[in-house]
Length: 166
Image 1 (cartoon, rainbow, N blue to C red):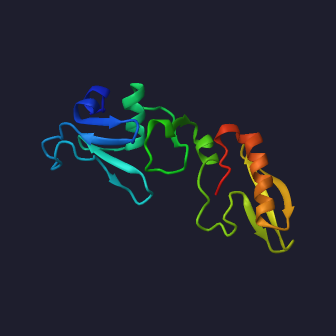
Image 2: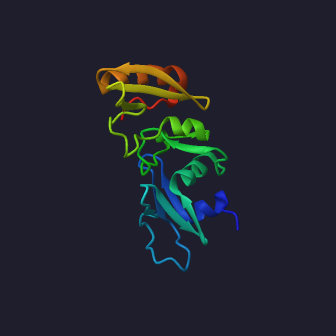
């Protein structure tokens, strides 16, 4: 059964200021009291909500609740916090645009996106991906200098989707 906007609003209330869903009328097999927060935190930091034998990401449900239809595109958390489902923090994006705003990976030694230490040059290297191609931005004495160059290029190539902080 496909989730409809009517069914969503029959079961849940959404507060766009806080991004929190609460149960209005939990399904019979759910043991959640009316008014309690809906969903659970996944290992990746997203809120998931079970409805009628299906699991849905809260950010996608928030989009549906406010815009009237389930999003066809990806939904990006502008501030990078996957549990922050306030409508002002959500935007429809392509997969590529969403990748431009992702957090620094845990195995990144510099702490900055697009910045890596190059042992052979003994310097920090900055690079950026544009249309599937990696562009070398230069070698720098410090990770901060490399990051500054990455931020400049990211703003140029990725516009409002650029992640300019780590």
